[in-house]
Length: 246
Image 1 (tube, rainbow, N blue to C red):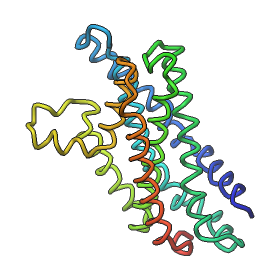
Image 2 (image 1 turned 60 degrees about the vertical axis):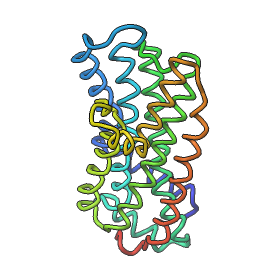
Image 3 (image 1 turned 180 degrees about the vertical axis):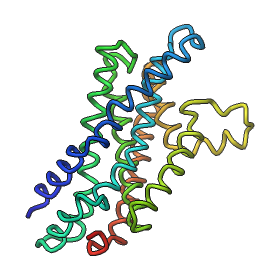
């Protein structure tokens, strides 16, 4: 069983789970629509509520995909497949990377389609002709989320414990990133902490691209998220033991 067949196997397992598909697609659009409608009277000028929350909820989904990756390791329905893979003539690195990569591919497909639908069907502003730069930021954040989620799974070795810890980490990133509420009024200390949130980096770079045609943060954000993703992946692959997920 070669590497790409394992990736395809894990990808299909995600696609066969209707709850995961709904959360990462319809769920995002419901949150976007809900916040857009509720806060429509609070925005004015060149940006409206649907423009802002289109990018904000995509950022949210990219971080929350960290909880989807736990399914490819520990969900009960995939453990039989894990048993076959564990005793196949493949390295543990290939097994670990297949779980991470399959979730990332799923996220890229889902989030790219959502961005395109929201801009070209519902007229939410993702940068017009610059939309693919914004999509690249969202997708690289999804890679960060996948690598962090996979690391948490192999540290706690339990779907339940990983699913208990990851929402807390995700909420902290989202809160300090100012995804749904600015934290400037909390003081300079909170603003300094906020600069450490990947969600903050992506939002700031995305809005600069969309409204100022400013790409100065694009490559630094991509590079930082890629470095952290590689770092988390290397640590997780080192800790990972396939027999613990059977």
